[in-house]
Amino acid sequence: MDLFEYQGKSLYGNYDIAHPNSFLASNIEDLEKDFNLDYPVVVKAQVQVGGRGKAGGIKLASTHEELHLHSNEILGMDIKGHKVEKILIEEASEIKEEYYLSFTLDRSEKKYLMMLSAKGGMDIEAVAAENPDDLTMVHINPAETLTDEVIKKAIHNSNLNIVYENELLKIIQSLFKLFVDGDCDLVEVNPLAITSSGVMALDSKVSLDMSAKYRHEEFDEIEKDIPIPPSEKSAKEKGLNFIKLDGSVGIIGNGAGLVMSTLDVVAEYGGSAANFLDIGGGAKAETVSAALDVLETDKSVTSVFINIFGGITRCDLVAQGIVEATKGKDLKWPIVIRLDGTNAIEGLEILRANPNEKIFITDTMNQAAELAVKGIN
Image 1: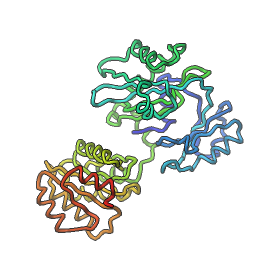
Image 2: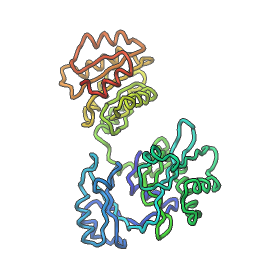
Image 3: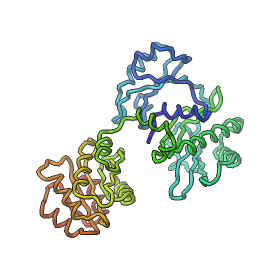
């Protein structure tokens, strides 16, 4: 579960992670409360998407009048399809240097991964692609701890300011503790800054591992403040394993591994997935019909790729579900289908016996991905 910046920073307080004083507002009337901050302040849109600064979602206010002006401009703003409903008002920091720090999971290595760079404030993907030597990557065995020696070596390798080594060491250890003890999938700070008040985490990007919810009572309260996209809400009600993504190709598959592979193949052909939707093993007609209903609630979907490899799942039942869900409908998008495995021949016969001008049958996963990305033009 991806958190808003203000939620991530509320977790900072539990781990003694230095960050600017701030105040959360949902409307202009909130600005009349005694929030006890010193000007200048930064008004920051609270959205779960990057690029808010370039979109005008971060502004500096030196007076109460400017605070009102900028807050009026930002509240209600649309940033990449995300409506700004809350703003974080934060004391501005006098920044001397900006760094990048993150902790995440490297599943291929089965280890934690720390990334550290002196190129803070920049898109870390661009840094990694254009200047890979500017990014220090350290793998950490989950059975072991992150030692001070390892952190100091990373600080030196990244050419961070050695004058602040002890402060950097302390905050990096605290952020790692948040990552591990807080059961996070990601803790990212960009920038981790040297300011006139010392080393501080000026931003917060935190993603929680919801499978660890049973260990954290606070996860329920945090989750209440996070809006659920209509498609995700619909999927939850139907008992489907669904995650909303930022692309345009709707994905339906059976089994998490196959769905992940489908996302990768779509990316190889220059597309991006609108979702992760796993109908599971043994999916029947009604399950497939429910999955297509969910995608109809997602305005970002321009084509759909149904990728089924029959094992427990019978391809004929999947095909029957597709027919039932699409019969007599004016489909919003083309559907590309690949069936293989148990009863695939029977499934293909069912689809061919019920033709639809917006349904396309393919022989291979690659062919299906290519057609879905092109939108069958």
